[in-house]
Length: 176
Image 1 (cartoon, helix red, strand yellow):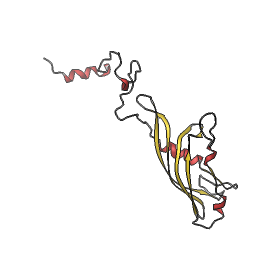
Image 2: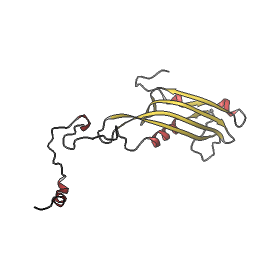
Image 3: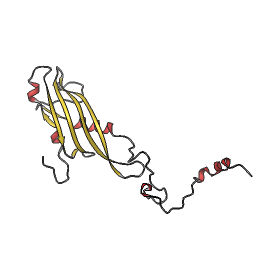
Image 4: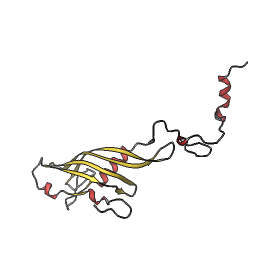
């Protein structure tokens, strides 16, 4: 598979010609295995890889796509802002309609090309954690100098008590 100069394969690999399946009897299915290197799903979503198997089944309404795909998206830790790869497992179950007038979001065009791109984009975004962490005990950044505290302490002399809560500190120390 050729990768363009930006290091990502085109999302054209997610366009599957299912014309042969549309001519089959109801209930016929075919499995498609995906082993895709870094993939640009859209301008705002890049996948590190895409692996797994999807089953395409002929139904009265169109093609039912079911299966599981493993992937990873690039993100950053919410505390220390370090880049990290976020593994995702996408569980896919969606009906692609052959009826152009149907109210379903996903349709198969007259060219019999089923485009998985919009579905994978949605599933990836929904599956990505809102605030990922590089590790559960991430120390974050120093609020004064911005040093990554996971790498060790910084040289800032921070007051351990937030000045807004200094009055509350007096309640913890009994008067002598």
